[in-house]
Length: 211
Image (cartoon, rainbow, N blue to C red):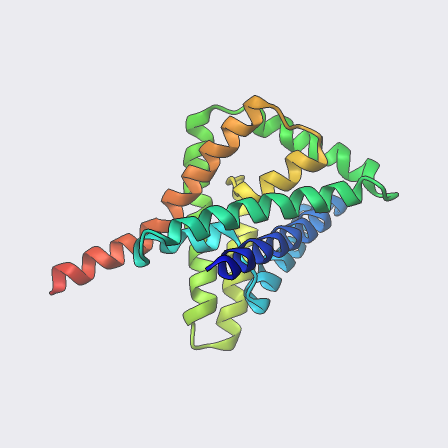
């Protein structure tokens, strides 16, 4: 059991680092369209290599036993650790100045927003991410698997939706951590939880009604 939880946390760290890779590419790219496309490298790597990402795993909380919540919490902590590590390492590089400026602007927009707005934007974000991740797992068409990841990520970035793990990375790069930041991150996390679980819950209800 301890090994399982340790693996879950470590794979969560790797998932956070992967999101950091995508986030760095986004921050380094002046063209928003290209930046959104390049951000997909994070989710693509996580899905391909089986790493853990909170926004993907939290969607299945109602499809598993209650102890699955421990896994989800450890993944969230692992993602946080991974994004902080990634941001910390980047602070020692020549690109730190450029990405700090862009991340700070992004953080300013997020932290000046209301809690209700962040919550709703987070719901829609993870609805898209669930569609992308579940499609990658179950789509029978190989091209469809990857197009789902691409369009899901690009759509949530262009829409301005809130992704809790990407936000962890931006807050870390932008040096924007505070009590207010933590509160808003928790709200975004809750919104991601609702958005991710929406379709699976509807599926469960649909199956029960059919029976």
